[in-house]
Image (cartoon, rainbow, N blue to C red):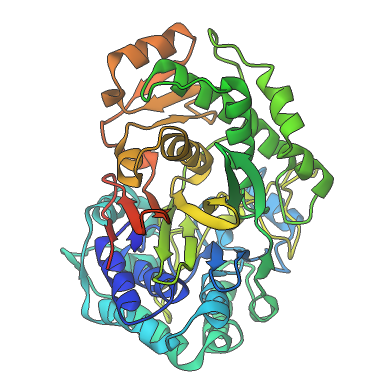
Length: 513
């Protein structure tokens, strides 16, 4: 079974499994397809993280496919030209090496079965022949038009599209990757084209930055939730924020069974998330930073300490920073039990809103997550990886995955995943029910300080109960895309079946074979 935020990408992944491909093969095919059919959310010019359970070996591996800041990404240069912060869009925002292609090859070389050319072929065909615009893509093209028209490459590809998106330059790029491998992108023609574009446009990326890029294999970060082992991608991913939130929630709630869509359940989840985000912003940056503090962050003792601060009748004030972002999450489970939890993104919609014309790829703006404040744990340092909102997750028992899940949603990913985990692991809901249920999202960013965005179909009783506890609510649409495109596959080993879910807020599907 696979789940993906675009139905065509899900069908492509299921087709790979039907041919005998592994979950890793399906993940590569889906990732490449999404780069074509969902270009506002992800692409060749972005980053990726994944978790993979190798059923024959019984081991789950994490991979950090994020790119580092360019060697020329000098904080003083940015302060001189751009003031107190790194631009969010434009060439100067494209300051980190894209890691997505490296992540495809890393998972394929270790766990794949089919040829890479076979896996990229559907994406190449979609780019060459064109695809109908999914509603989310069409909306984003309109919403981001003021940025897209400022760049010649982005304007040529993503504006004036009349119903069908054809991307011949991207088709060639994917064809060359399929034919010549990872080196073509990081050491060959693609790296040279990006470097030449960057020098003209004002990005610090250079050929040497691409040649030095290497993703990182790692052990998953782990905690516990509802009797399961909770596994996530480790820092610089924000994944451990989910572990902290899950453990604070459980410490606060205890054995109580809270009704779904009740004010009590949503209040407890929001309060746990607030404290988890505060810890995240204190500690999480590039991998390897302050490892002892991160061990404390996911410890039961920390969860107990933080839960003691919470009250059932009153909302806590907190100061963590949260914001937006566009991402694609997908999950794949194959016939022998291998499982991939995979997330891939450009960060904001269309990333930096710049396209390298020779390659047809948009470059990510992930470097805007760096700070120019010397005292900030996420300060800009050349060759350092930025703080990453991307995170992939699993719930595991006795070393085997039981739920493979995640979501787009930028900073909100731990909150969305917490809600999914509560519903699937504590309330025993199937993935589709958990994903389709009403969703909430606590903000603490400019313009939304301390507010809780919520889908009003959660019910008036819940809304009243949250307001009575001091939550400032912002009711949105009943199926709000900014609440994320989630996906999940549950593995019922006793029943010998897979249960999948895809988000109605997106354009996706869960497809089993």
